[in-house]
Each structure stands twice: as structure tokens, then as C-alpha cells.
Image (cartoon, rainbow, N blue to C red):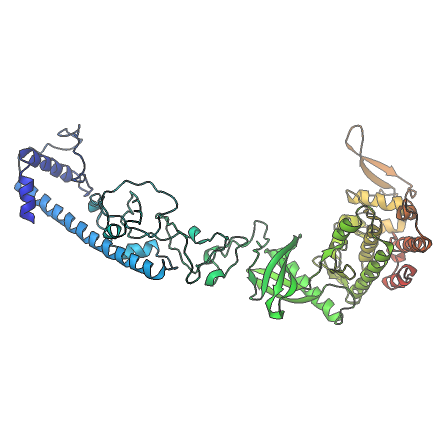
Length: 585
């Protein structure tokens, strides 16, 4: 074989030998062994820098050298052997791949790029540039997207056997020797958006492989896309590379519809999001698919501690009300899921804010419904007092009702505390439902929850917020518009009295001037009530006698609950025995 090549090579004459000598000189000029000649199949182009002096190089004036030709022959022989060996390897791998695809309809477990490289050893860099005529592998299906490639006239044995199989275009890159193409992770997602392997016997969709991917694709890894069900198609476990990406920037858990939490709760809906957590709807497979609500606490240290405190409060309330008669939300159990504390509650339909919007927007609910809701809310406050717990955030948003809208449950104990831990702060409780003692900095107790309940009951009947102040100062002004000026003895007890009253207990009202639009302070030494609670409750209604009597009872109840002096505020036991509660319509 060497003699045939030498004979062919000798037929070119002196010009061909000079060409080989120039290539030899180019190769000896590069001490790093980099390739300085092109494929013998490429067209010979005139080098305009040929025989010119480069920096630090000398002209090689030798006319001919048999030794150089011998070296060239040896290297070219090595290149031919490498090409032949690689062709045989390609054909063997191609036959194996085609055989496997025919037997198993393209097996669901893809071959990774790294595995392909281990089966096909890469040649030295000096021989890569001479392998552009290798046969590209064939596939059962053409790729969805065309890639930039050069046409090849050669066909593999498989292509000659199967004329219906379209050839796959070859990538011109340093990875072009990869024998097979493995599908990418994106191609594994089916048309329904569910990531997973195809079931046995099913048709596998055309897949694509990114030859520049740095990592293998593992068929047992789940996608962490919101809305994708994990475990579908027999693939188990979560993607370990995404374990730190379950939360958003604020620490809320990214809920995925269809995922299974704690190996039993399958999420099927999203309820909403609050300051401390977000809530999802799920089915408990351990209890025959019973509907539950799962509260997922935000993943940060402060929220986690708050969640643990809420868990402790809920357990004490449930223990104190084993028969579930006092209308506080029932806690079933708790667990941890991806560093989030999760609490499982009984499922309820909607909160009272939503009930108002749906059934009594701007007009309120019927007095009969208000009476029933008020009684259940007072029972919840009675349980809180029995357990020495302050809810500290009672409002329509934190009161839930069941599907029939007849049963009420107090929920969201994230702000709750023990009665002896009443820290003085002017921003406890949502502002519209904040008691005056909180704003003034007076030591408080269970009366703050009763005040919030009174504001909530008023809103249920009228559909309007009772005190909609934009600041604590304006809230005090609205209180006095209804109840008159604060008693001086109450003002002097407050730690924050100087923010709202002067040394003579005159109210310092902060308001914005309508002309200059600048804030100004108006001193008010005496404030007389300007609001009539009864007229606000009745409004423009023409009520029957029984309903009018109930409205008068409601007005009396609210008057006694909304006392500025906490010592004169109606106790919870007396509220439960008030005529508005006891007398049914």
C-alpha cells in the first residue's frame, strides 16, 4: 500500500516535492507542534508570504531531502490508519444504535454526550483537521431544527440500506466526531407540558441534543417548572441542582399544581398569599382524598419563628376546645417541606371580606346573618380569653366561613401572643381595626380583640369601614368624631401621648392644608361627636319592626364595645348575653 502511494506521489514530479518541502519547512517553524497544513483534498492556494522572512527565522535553502519525504509519508500513513479506525468505530456504533432503535423504538433512556465521547476516543488535534470526510450518523427521524453544516457526498452503510431515512447534516465543530445525538432535557417535555419518560410502547417524539452542553442529561431528574407534576412517567425525585430555587425573592414557596407534599398532600389549587405565608388547597391521600388547606410559612428566620409561635398557639386552642365548639380554625398537623414550615388546616370556603363583596357590597349583610356571625365571633374571643391568648389581628379578612356560609371560624394567628407578652407598639393590629389604647401606648389586654370585633360587626352590617384613618393621628380624630374627646386620665396613661396631644391634653390634629397642600397642626381643645351611629346603621332603609328592633340592639352593643376607656368596655361574657345575640329574629 505504501508503494502505491509513493508511486502516485512520484508522478507529480518536482513541483509536488517542492510543495511537500515547503510544508515541511512550515511545520518545522512551529515548535509547539500546531498544524500548519490543510487537508490534501482542499484546493492549493498561493501563499503570498511563501519564502518570505519572518521575524527571527532563517531561510532553509536545502533543495531536497529524502528524510523529509519519509517523515511526511510516515505521518500521512498514521493519519490514514486513524481515519480508517475511526470509520470502523463509527460504523459499529451506528449499527448498534440502529439495531437498538429498531428493537426498542428509540429507547426512552437517552445516550448522553459524555458517554458518546468515552466510546469514541478523540484523535490528536493534529489529525482532527483531516477528518472532514467522515460519514455523519443517521437517525430514524430528522431533527426539528436545522443546524449550520456543510453538505457531504458520502453516505454511511445504513443510509444506503434505508433510502427513506433522510441524512442528518453534520456540524462543523471540534465535536463533530460525536457518533450519536442525545436528546436534550427540553425535548423530553411532552406536548402537555409534563416532563417524563414516555410509557412503554408509546411513540417517542423527535428529540434534539445540544452538542455544546456541558453536562449529561439524567432521565431520572425532574423539572422544577411551576405547574409540572413531579413523578409523572415513572421518574422519581426532585432535581438536586434546583433544591435552592424553590422560593421566590421574598421567601414565598413557589407552588406547583400537582406536586405532592409530605408524600400525601396533592396540591390542586392556590388560595392566596399573606404577610407571613401563602396557602394552597390540597387532597390528603392518607384520609381518602379529604380536602385540606396547607399554609406554607415564608422561608426566612423571622417568619419561621413566627410560624412556630402560631403553631404553639393553635395547638393550645385546639386542646382547649376538643369538641370544636368555639369557632377557631382547627389544625390537623404540621410538617416541613423544602425548609418551609407547613400547617394543615380544615378546608373553608371564603373569608368575610369576600362574602361582603359577593353578597353585600356597599350595603352589608342581613341583620340575621350579622347576628349569627357576631355570636360565633364572640365565642371565639371567649376561647382566646380562656387560653390567655390575644389574636391581635381580627378583621373580615381573617374570618373564614364554610361552603354553606353558616359556620364561621377565626383564623390567621400569626400576630397572636400570650396575654402577658403585650409589647407596647403603636402598629399592632391592622390600622382600621386598631384599638385606641394601642395607638396611645397604653398597656392592653383582651379588649383590643373586642374593639376589632366591634369594627368588624359594623362593617358586616353596613358594608363600610367604620374608621378609615390614613394615620394613627387621623384614627384618633375619627374615634372622637363618634365618641367625643378622650378622658384626660386615659390620655396621660399613654406612652405616645406626646405625638397626638399637648401638655394640656389638647388634641394636635395633623391635617393637610387644602390651599398650600402642606401639613399643618391644628390644636383642638374640645371635640364634640359629629357621627350618629344609629343613622349610619339604618341608612335609607325602611325596615320592618322586628329588624328595626334588632338594629337598635346592634347600635347599643357597638356603643358598649367601642368605649375609649378600656375599663368601661363591655366584657366578652356580657357581649354573649346581650339581647342582640340572645334574641333571634
